[in-house]
Image (tube, rainbow, N blue to C red; front, side):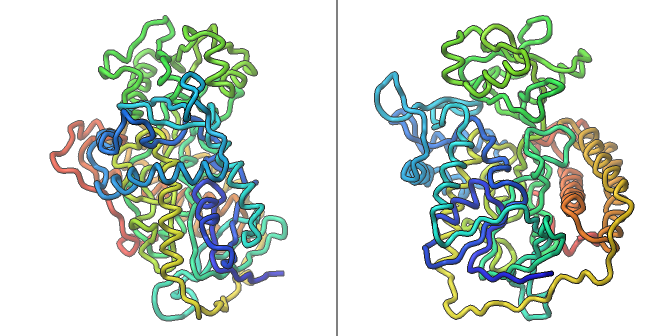
Length: 534
C-alpha cells in the first residue's frame, strides 16, 4: 500500500554532503536521509586521498586558489573557488569537532600529517591514512544515528521530484519526491519544505569506473526533468590509476601514491611521463590519464604500471595500508612489485547548476556535492577538492535553508503515484541489453579522447535508447534497475550534447577535431525546455 511521509527537510543521498548538511540543521527540524542501498555504499566512503585545505604556515589561500584555477584549465568560477578555499579550514575544524580520526604528524609530534597530490603546489591534503572517505563517512553516520531529529532510511530509490507544476499548484517549487520502496515495490510520496539532492555523480554511465554501483546520475536527471539547468557535463574525470585485475572491481590506487614518489612505467620498466608533462606523475589527472591512454593504445597493452616499491615495506604499509592489503589479496606485493593500473571514469565535474548556497533553478530544491555544478572544478577537478566541496556547500546550504524557513509552511497533500496503468514486466532482457549498450558506447565514443564522428554516433544511439526506455517506463511497473537506466540515459545525453557544443580541447574534454584551446573560457549550460526529451 502506498504511503505519504512528511518531513521538514528531505535529503536524497547518504554520503558526505548529505550527512554534513543534516548534522548542521537544528534539532527541531525533522530530517529524512534517503539511501538507495546501505548508508555507506556511495562514493564518499571510497575516497582514499583526503581533503584539500590550507593548514600549513608555508601554504596560502591564494596558492590553493591558483592551483585550482590551473587544474581546471582556467574555466573555474573565481568566486566559487575563493568561497570554497576560504571556507576550507573552517570545514576541517568542524570535521575535527565531529571526531574524524585524521592521521597525526608523528615526525613533527604536532598537528596533522599533510600529503601532496597532483596539481598541488604545497602539502595541503589532510587525511586518515588512505581511507579518508571511510573515516569521514563512518564518523558522520555515527553522529547522524545519535541525532534524534534525523531518520536514516535505506533501500529506497528516488524516482522523481514533485513540483507544484506536477500537482497543479502555481509557481515552480519542489515540494517533495516520489520514492520507490524496494521491499514492497510501491512508490511512496515524501513531502518537505526543502529537498536536497546529494546523490553523487554519474560515472556509472561508463563501462569502467572507480565508483560504486549507485553512481547513476539520479540527482542530475531528476533535477533536469524538474526544470533545472545542467552545466559542464562534458567534463568527466578519468582517474589515471585504477587497479587492473580481473577480480578487482573498481578499486582505486590513490593519487597519494604518486604524491609520495610512485612512478608510472611501461611493461618494459621504462618511465614515460617525461614525454607528456614536466610535472611527471604529479601533473593534473586529465594529463596523466591521457598519457596512459595514449601509451596503452600505441603499444596495444592492457595496462601500465605504478611502482612505489622503492619506498620500502614499512613506509608503504604505514601510509597505504588499505591499498597494500587489497593488492596482497590479488597476489601483488606492492613493496616488491609494480601495480598494474588503467584509467577509469571517476568524477563528474559538471552537474545541476546551483548558486553559492546550493540552490537550484527550482525553489526549495538544493543540490550539493558531486551532483552540483558550482563552478569550483572548471574543466578538471583538482585532487581532494571534491570532499572539500561537500562540506563547504553543505554548510552554506544548511544556513540558506534556515534563513529562508517558512514557519507557517503547510505540509503538502501530494497526489499518489499512479500505478493503475502499468503491469509487471516480462521483458527485463531489454533493460540488461540497453544498460550494457549504453555504458559501452559511452566508453568507446565519449571517453578520454573524442571526435565529432564518435559523438554523432553516440547521440544517435542514446536518442534511440531514450525512446525505448521511456516507452518501457510508461508501460511497466518501476524497478530500481529501470530508474537507474532511465537516469543514466538522460545523463549520457547531457554529456554528449555538452561535448558537441564545445569546439575546443580543454581539461577533461579532449577532441581530435578541435585540439587547440579557445582564447576565451566559457561554460556549457543546457536548459531543459530546449530539448524535446527533457
